[in-house]
Each structure stands twice: as C-alpha cells, then as structure tokens.
Image (cartoon, rainbow, N blue to C red; front, side, top):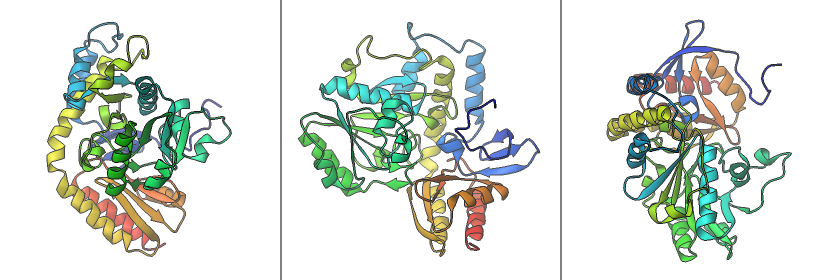
Length: 373
C-alpha cells in the first residue's frame, strides 16, 4: 500500500483542465460543477493566474517571513482593504486555527461557540470547533468549544457566559449540507455579540471569493465580522489561507505568537493577486448567471426525488430522497462532476466562469437523470 486509505477516489485520472472542462487521461471531457471542492472559482488554469505563476516562478517561489514581502501587502490590501489586517497561512484549517488563537489572545477568554453541522477543518483546533460527531469520531476533542443550533438564536444565548471569547460560524454551512444563515438570525447574532462584547468569526473558506455572488458571503448579510477566514479559491488552486481581523485586534497577534514557514510565499501570493484581479472583472457581471443557475434549480426542485433545494449565489445543495453517493457516481459516468454534502445532499459549486450554455446543459442533464429516479 502506497497511500493511506483516508480518501475514496473515483476510478478516473484527469490529465488536463480548462475553465469548467476537465479531460481524463483517455481524452474524454467532463463538465466541472465542483470547482475542485470550491477552489477553481475562476476556472481551472485561468490564463491570468497561469501567467502570474510563470512570471513569479522564473524569479523565486519561496521567501521566509523574515523579510519584506510586497506581494503579501498587495494581496492583503485587495482582501481586507483599510478595515482589516491580514495573516497568511497555507490552508483554511490553518486560517481557522489562527482565528481561534487570535480571539483568545485578544479577549483573554477561552470559549468558542460554533454550530452543529459546521465544518472548520481537520487540524485539532479547527476539528474541535467543527460541530459534527462524524468528524470527532474516535478522537478526544480539545476543550473550550460549545455548539449551538444553526439559525436558532436562543441556543446561542443559552451558551454565553463570562468566558465566551467568540462565536464562529459559516454563513452557508457547506460540508454540513449547504444551509444558508437566515438574515434575522444573523442580525440577532450580531446584536447579541455586541451586547456581550463577543467577537464574531466568519469562516469564509468555502463561501468567499465570489462563491455567493459577493467577494465574501458576509457582504450579503449587512455586517462586518471581527475576524474572517479565507482559503480554497483565494489562489485558485494553490495552497493558501488567510485570516483577516479588524485593525484594533492586530496587536494581539504580536511577535512570536504565531507563524508559518510557507505561509504567504511569493508563488501563492502571485496566484492570489491574479485571482483577485480576475474576480474584480467577474463579480460585476455574475448576477445573470446566478439567475440562470437558480431558474434551472427551481425546475430540479419540483422533481419527486428532491425534497429541497437551498443555497446562495453559485452554491447549491439538492436534498435527495435517493442515495447521493449513487447520484454522484452516476453523474460522473455522464461526464458531470458534482459533490455530496451533509445528510444525502447533492452539492453544486460550479466555477463562476463556467459558460452559461455549459451550465445550462449540465443542469438539464442532472434534471433528466433525477427525473428517472
């Protein structure tokens, strides 16, 4: 055995990709509605990102965080503007670890309230913040975490005490089944946090970088979190994570409190800078595609095998009355790449740059397939 058996790998090898089309080693084309699990938001091998990588690779691709890094400064400005200070890591889990540490350092308190069916990563702190028994199975969890019920404000209020440092949440629970937060819940949550001087951490690892129609999902909910985490699509496929915190919190992560050998290296920063530039062009014109997406999803929602369709922007979950594992496999046989999530939910995360005709064709094929179940 060469690799640990911790992944279920489909019996297919991909050898080339272009935007929303992946090609197998046999030359067969597949339509991607997964974005590589929410990574290729501007499509695989976007030429602007490729060019930036090539240019940087010819110079150097590693620089320790012992020296000035103008690329980090540029990406931080594009990410957080003037209101946020940024720390760069290598993944979403690492960004969430940094957020948990910062919240505790800044407040002097230890308890983090997160939510059942949330997902924040598989490193120990992030895993302990995750409110899923299946993720915790067989392992002791770290102390200092409590789990409220998503979209139920009373369940949050019941957990608050004098040691509560932060409330940590996804605005759309992705791995948990694609459940969006209600506006009323978020408005009440913000007031509750302000009343008790509690920080709000929003995990935007999957929802950020345009996935919900805005650069970050919180922009749909009329508030600014104290701390935001980002990864996945930030560099369109290169491993990078970022933690953004309101400027007044920055000094809590002082010299020696945190660090990373590879975090924010020039190669991934060049890809992130290019990706953010592409998003600047994509986002203003995305709404018509979102409208097409949900028009087609409405037709799928009417099928007898579908119990509910939910989501936000270009992120959708189709709750099924038939085993989702079989659906994912069957659709791959039809050359359509999709994902599963939560309790029997088909998850769709198409690239924001997918051509509209390709998106329509793939969704029509999904509807035709599900109509026969």
